[in-house]
Image 1 (cartoon, rainbow, N blue to C red):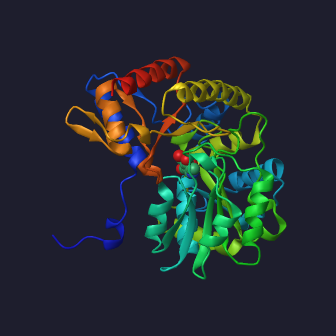
Image 2 (image 1 turned 90 degrees about the vertical axis):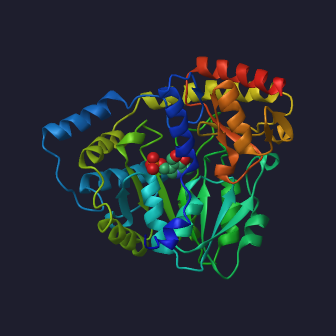
Image 3 (image 1 turned 90 degrees about the horizontal axis):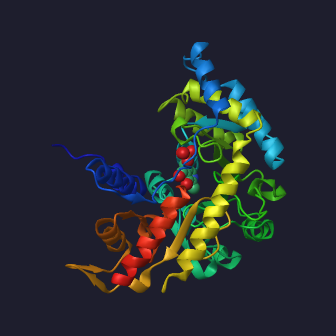
Length: 396
Ligand SMILES: Cc1ncc(COP(=O)(O)O)c(C=O)c1O
């Protein structure tokens, strides 16, 4: 066999998707696994959005659209940015992709050259480092652990910048930590970036899942950042539309032009039917959204309270998204059967095999002392899960 791609060989399998697949496999073998690995809302897509998709099929809206997205959806995205974020964009500033992940991929590949450095904070969303690698660029990590409530400081950002820094990826609300930066904190980071020509890819996919009256502050609204920020968002999380695969990017037209060209030679347009459904999602009142957020908040209150009652676990406040990310390193060094639990992988392996609880190892997000527990599941499962978790850890 001839040698395969060196570049693609450096890319790791998505660990979050891998654990989800393993849990599904165990379930299909009849094992009763309580999974807390989901990276998607457990709610259904609202009925009127589904109907817009069905109508699109019945109206034969089933052909290629413009590769960068249909004019209708581009218009809807422009209004979304205007109404939700106070941002003005023209159609040439917008790219519609097959999910926000695809937008991020297209944008990073359009911005980076081999040897460039891209700053991300750790814990990070699982795909950033792998996409940066594919661009031939280098990841520069800034550590923000639980004690810092998973937020970086302006000084940390300043220290990470070198003449090679091309971009900074910013994600608030965050997956995996649920951390949300305030307007003041974002301004302080932007102050560090002023006049440095560094691009910011601002991943705002959890924008609408915020708790306790927190508001979302888009980095691109800061006057001196506007020409440097590429804002990424999508319909997956806010409208429970993960399977429809629609995301979008908005930013300087030179970058968007390259990203559009790249997409035109890989996937072409995102699914036409999903685009039509997304127009409905973005242009109509979604009554289900506040109900979904209220439900996430209830679960958040429960899970943070319960986790922090377990001896040795520290779970910082969660201000947005639907994940708890907590330190379990005090259990490292314990023996379970023939296995020494000494990292987040062996810890999650122990819970999966011994207690049939599915959590995601923190190493997938760059922090091997932690694990991620999604609360996109029923209260009943959360109650059962946390009880089993406590008992299993007591048994160690
Ligand atoms: C932080 C973050 N960004 C982007 C995405 C990608 O979302 P999608 O491709 O479903 O639009 C996800 C999904 O889990 C995410 O958590």
